Picture 1: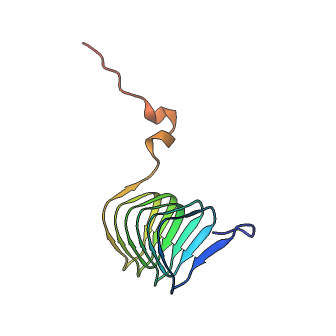
Picture 2 (picture 1 turned 180 degrees about the horizontal axis):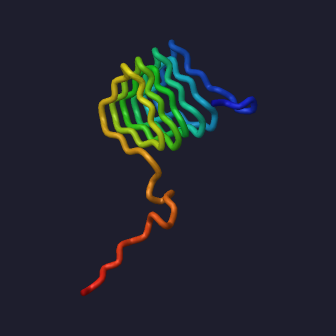
Length: 127
């Protein structure tokens, strides 16, 4: 969520963007984006919003439609009326009843972020 110092970029329902979108603020999409989205804040896709392309963000809430893969470093919420076709990579996933998800999902901490104790390689022992 946006803090007081952080701005929110809004893409209205009558706006279509053909190209890549990137930035550091939160983004609220009620219109259409055909291209990749890379933001450091939260991505909110409203019920009438549509994104077709690769998405990389800290967190996202999808109430509309997405066709493409998403890499969400923190939390992804697929609301009850959302439609998501693509692959998901996130730390935490919430899928509400009624949401449509078609694709694969990879969840949890990536191997590079795991504590060293969990990254021990097995040693081969000759008997």
